Image (tube, rainbow, N blue to C red):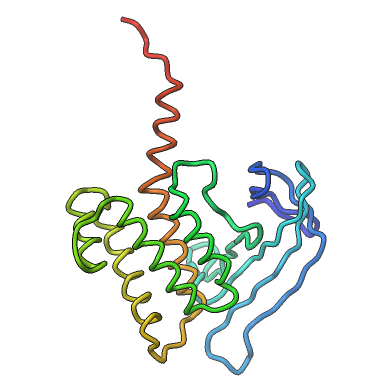
Length: 215
């Protein structure tokens, strides 16, 4: 990713262009020195050079982003995330109920991690219902979609992790959910939605524009 003190090159969620985003403001935070786990996060207010609209993003690095190489040794990799505007799937063939449920989970992410996990589990339940999954429990519905090849095995595993965490959150267990884990669950849900709905939609779009060559 190209970046400097004044701008970064990233996708603008408003207009969809990967372009120059001017940095209008910065805020830096980091872990308490007394804690064992180290992390730092730089928050950025950005303005798109294409559409002129404002976004909020951040660079995160910590002990969970460390990589090693022969030449550079230990390195803290920076991960960029767009926090506003929230990414949704309006305009694709993602069902409105699925899109609304996922959007709701994203909106509460920075308010309450427990509510976010419950909302993500609800999103998974709506996907299973939309795909006519059979079974009395969510676990059996996920297995049914895997057996029907709607979910591949890796999506099955991601879905099951999401189901378990969502159950814990819904049952009021006294658990403090690490924000990094919740972010991964958001990523898992997004991957599931893209695999089930978005990728087939894009493939069909491309196929419809290809003119078969006459032999």
